[in-house]
Structures are given as C-alpha cells and as structure tokens.
Amino acid sequence: MKGVIFPGKGLAVLQEEPPPTCAPDTVLLKTLYSGLTNGTERNVLLGGNYGGTFPARCGYQLVSRVVEVGEQITQFQEGDVVFTGTFSGHVEFHTAQETDLILKLPPGLDSQEAALLGVASVPLHDLRRASTGVEDNVLVMGAGLVGQFAAQVARILGARVTVADLDDHRLSLARFFGADQIANTAGESGREILDELKPFSVVVEVSGADVLDQIIGTTWGDGLLGHRARVLMIGGRDQVAYNFNAAQDHEVAVLHAGHFDQSDLEIVVHHVLKDDLRLRPAVQSVVSIDDAPRIYETLRDDPNRLLGVVFVWG
Image (cartoon, rainbow, N blue to C red; front, side, top):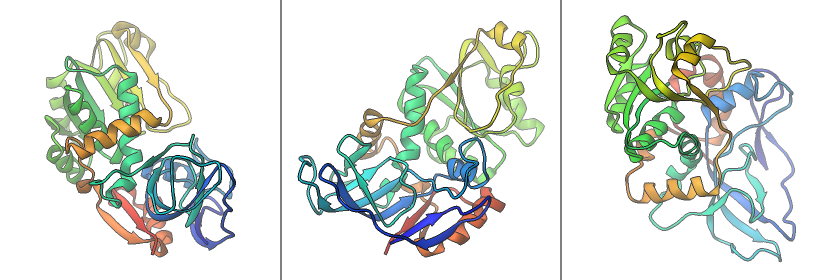
C-alpha cells in the first residue's frame, strides 16, 4: 500500500509498505480522502515540539470505506464510509476499533468535505473548554484552517467574533464565514482595530506566533484582555512565556487542550448538516495523493500558500 512518511527533517516521501491486517476487534479501512492538518503536520515535518524523531508520520483526518470487519465488530459493516480522527497518518489502508474516534458518515455529508472534520472539531473542543457563550467577545489569532473553524464555532456558540491574521485572502475567507470583524495585524491600522474592539473575553491563539505580549500585555493594564479572560493555546510551540504582572492584572486563565473527542465530532457533524458550519469553502485544493511530496515541499517552504488540502486516494 501507499503511505506518506517523513524520513528526515523537512522531507516527505510517498512509499510502498505492507498493509495492516484485520483483527477480530477492528475494521479494515481503505482511505478515500485524507485532509492535511497544516499546523500539526508542518510541526512534525520540521521536528517541532510534536515531533523531533524520524522517521515519522502525521495526520488525523481520514475518510475511508470499510472493506473488512472483525468478528467482534457490531457497529459497522462492509461498505460503510467512515471518518476517523486517530493519528494513523496518510495511508492507503488502516484499521480502527469501535472505541476509537470513528464515525459513520450520515447521508447528506459529502465525503470529500468530511476530510476536514478533524480541524473543525479541534476548536470546538477548545471553545467548549473555555465555556464560550453569547456574552463573549472572541478574538481568533491566526486564520489558518483551525482559526477559520474556530471563528465559525464561536459564532455558532453565540459569541461576537474577530479574526486577526497577516494574510488578506485568509481574512476575506473568515469574513465570508461570518466573522463580525477582521484585522490585518501586519500594519498599525489592524492593531488599532483590535484596540478599538477590546476587551476580549476569549482569545483563541492558533497562529503559533510570538503574540502573547500583544494579547496579555507587558505590564499592568496592558494587552487586549478583559477581567478574567480566557486564552486558549492551540498553536504548537516549545515554550510559553508571558508577563506575570499583566496576566495577574487581568486574572487571566491560560487554557491548554489536546485533541477532540467523540462528542465534539458528533456536534460538528450536526452543525455541518444544519449548514451552520461550512466545510466546502475551506477546501482550497483537491489533489492526488501522488502529489503529496510536492504539497509537503510547499508546506515546508511557503505554508501560507496552502489552506484546506484534501488528498484523493484513487
């Protein structure tokens, strides 16, 4: 079978490898589509805090068809099309247990779009952790895939939403998705917009950039936060540092969250079917898995050129 592997730092190849076998408590799955998880996969590709050991593989958004069912399986049958959110990587065949992050795709949910269900479920998990609701003024720092869906989810939860980024195309997409305000913080005018819209009660930091001094501040009374605001750290990095005085002044809660769970996935699917949460406009590139090495070169060298990439397994 085919599989994407990172043999060394910054390198990605498509290789032939033996397929897995179906155990009594698993289903054997043949991948139809897999979604690129830009930030996490670039982090692993470059040996960041999620990686550092090679060879490695990454990826957690696969839409697959069940081709074989173990004798202990009761919830799935051959021919079912499912989404899995486990870290199997981009592989042609993989297995899953019924207790894994796996969901049979309901009628009406496009299989290709479903390859982005993972990056939609991550910010839902985090915003639920921050108890985000109708009284919140939310700032999303970073308009990549997770940021785009974070803005949509915050809007679904009833919050007012501002999205900040350095890329006008991504900001235009955020506005299309329903963000109340956008701000290009590459210039002074964008930073002035954030100053006008503050204080923010929830900040989703998904850029991974050095922006905590801007968000929390560098001294008493500084920053963009209101009293007892919550800062959600999603963008991966090795160390997190912020000014104690500014954070104490705000009585800020810095929240970390991991992956998503089954309930997050089911809630996201519910809102996609209601058309509250839109996946299709975020799918910016649909390419054959044979083009994966080229895509990963772009992810390594010019990541802003990529947004929603879906690999097709012919």
